[in-house]
Amino acid sequence: MLVDIPFQPKWQHKMLVGLKTCTSRTKRYGHTGDTFRHFGKTFIMLSIEKRTLKNIADNLYTQEGCDSQEEFKEVWIELHPRKGWVPNQKVFVHFFEKV
Image (tube, rainbow, N blue to C red; front, side):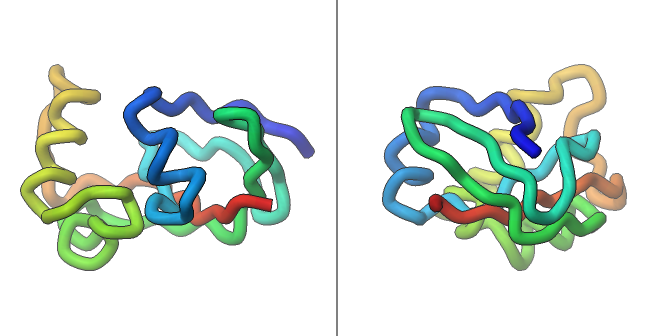
């Protein structure tokens, strides 16, 4: 199934060259095997897991396209200014690859 997942333009290069291979969201945007199109390319969802923000920052910040744990936290706070950084908040991590 084709699903719609929004991405900021700043992620284009990293997604197209395979440096950003997951995205963390407060809601689930599909299921394993679903596809989405962005930046003129198709991506397939490999898996979706629920993890805490701290776990993502500690273990997946590079797959999120960030250069450090701190950068991942800053990106999260920028996108979620009302709730901010809550380390134990569980979110959906969508793992994907370019088709």
